[in-house]
Length: 369
Image 1 (cartoon, one colour):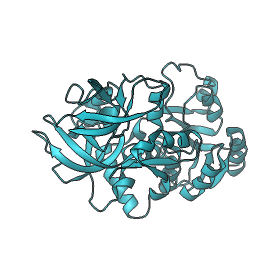
Image 2 (cartoon, rainbow, N blue to C red; image 1 turned 120 degrees about the horizontal axis):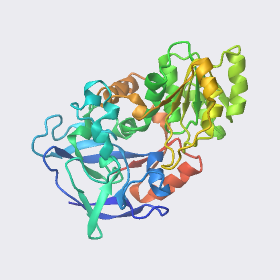
Image 3 (cartoon, rainbow, N blue to C red; image 1 turned 30 degrees about the vertical axis):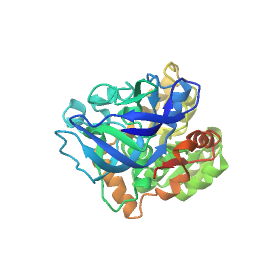
């Protein structure tokens, strides 16, 4: 079928919205008509070249919609089902999945390959094959994806909100709740309160953190963070350190999450200074491929038993956590509506990412007809 998609042809350029040909579902695949796609910072990393995906590629990896067609052998969904697309597939059979770590599914190795899980490229444009971000490519009103990337959800959840749980919400929430293991009474610091960090804040709130310190140079984001559960705000790590010293009587925070737009090694040492004995520092930010240096006090780690942890998809299990988080939204516990700063049409995608770069958006969302 012919449809529209936002294609990146070269790093350093903009998204090109143009007509593409989308193949029918192969065995194990489904075609989804999308209601909405989130505009995550990870797709911006394709433009900058920080994520080394082969080009050309259709961007987008946060999406929700309705199953329109299914290929042979599909058993988990059927036509008409409302679904959320998980940016990391989960096969349920590999070592990681079978030990409760679906976010580390072996199929995740393919998400930057530009090919679909069923093999080959499913989209063509300008006479050549085009890859898809995370085997999805949600910057298009129609997606063909493997059922391992498709999670059925309740029919009473607005899908423009549900789309965000396919990546950003779950990643931020899980970074606090699962990777950082925030518990009732803990003190949490969140460095960077954009689309990921804002959900790390509300993850800490839902987990019962006593104090949550949101750190960001943008005043409007700090104001929003207060609505999501931040008890204190700071515009820099140095400013936050003084706050944490005061509210903990010098013991420092139990956990901190780094959720800035681009992870730089220079930030590790100063972020480590926010946590105390047995504290957990979680690195959720995407870093450039060649970023291999980090500043860190190894003696500080040893003497105070501090921990530095990486986190992909918030250490979450998509088939469990996507429906669970939407239940929390349905019950009024998890905030999704307030995350969406502005909506766009597909033709406005470059405007939306300009707004993200300028700090005007917590999360932009593309709405489809």
